[in-house]
Length: 335
Ligand code: SF4
Ligand code: SF4
Image 1 (cartoon, rainbow, N blue to C red):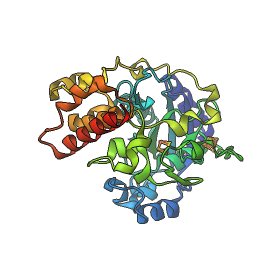
Image 2: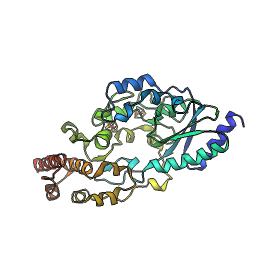
Image 3: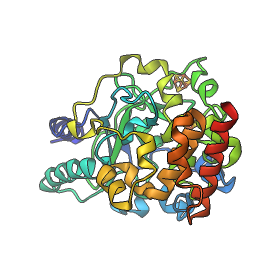
Image 4: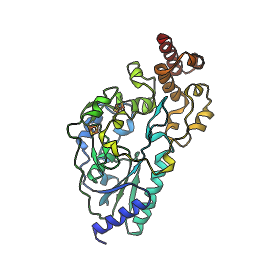
């Protein structure tokens, strides 16, 4: 097979494994290294220290696999409508954690590639690669003003997987940016975290503040947080390219039944794990779940929630007790 036939053979294999989109980036793909290094130097990654480590390796794929010749980028659609009107968990986190699901599929594709003589390194989200510019270079879509990758058929709702390979594959045509004059994601952001087109200050982003941030939610972000308990989809929900979004065909991503928020305030660690084991929410832990739940209840709760909140007012963890006092005071000030 020549480089083009090999690419098309692997595309068919990837689609048969359940991936929705497939493309190939050249080994010297433009990963916007200068932009990334400046973003890190400006501290916009906040407490996500792993992002700032080893930036050279992250921006040069051949440091990961010196003999690499091509980079495969695949996407898996995870869209589903938001199931809970009372509070929101970002759509990507409603069901089973995507890392294992995508890694298993990538490994199967790597097995096929090994049989064709290639050596491979697969990554899902946590590896030393810049997935988004690689996805653009591989023709999957373009990076929108919200910085998310937009794909014409699936909109913004794609998990990305990467395989760095020694196989020589013909590159796909890079995607063209089709945001045009639209600025919907920028104006929809409740915390003005998209500080300029294509520039996100993670420290202001509710996805960062509710998931990555370790301490109390800064007071100025508590009201804008609204009813978002884990992540935020606002800049994605408003994107016109999501008009054609289709529901995911991966059943493991489908939403689990969600608990009543005030009942979670009397949970044990075990209750928390029973609910969220195997989902992205598990990494929060019970204390930060309470932190977020209390912020949501401060914004949306009623006097009927005060008893449940009161149980955490004297909690031994100062973050939890302070958030409980804040939630109580917010509800009392409204009633
Ligand atoms: S995820 Fe939410 S807070 Fe973050 S940039 Fe998008 S709209 Fe803003
Ligand atoms: S909302 Fe508009 S500007 Fe933002 S990513 Fe979508 S198309 Fe681009």
